[in-house]
Length: 54
Image 1 (cartoon, helix red, strand yellow):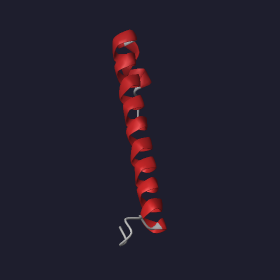
Image 2 (image 1 turned 90 degrees about the horizontal axis):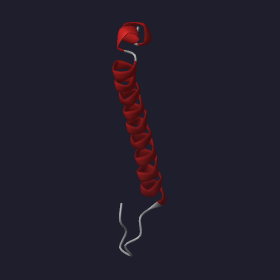
Image 3 (image 1 turned 90 degrees about the vertical axis):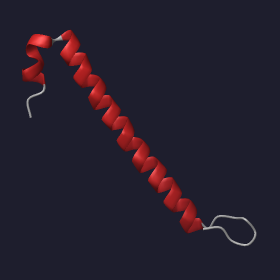
């Protein structure tokens, strides 16, 4: 992606931004779902199967 003057191309910059935002957003969603799962398991153990039904 680097040119001779050590600048990144527009396409390379766009690809990096897209990947960082997409993967970062996916990771944040996964962590939020995992945190909610632990919250329900600890705070509402008797209703866990009701909340986590597919």
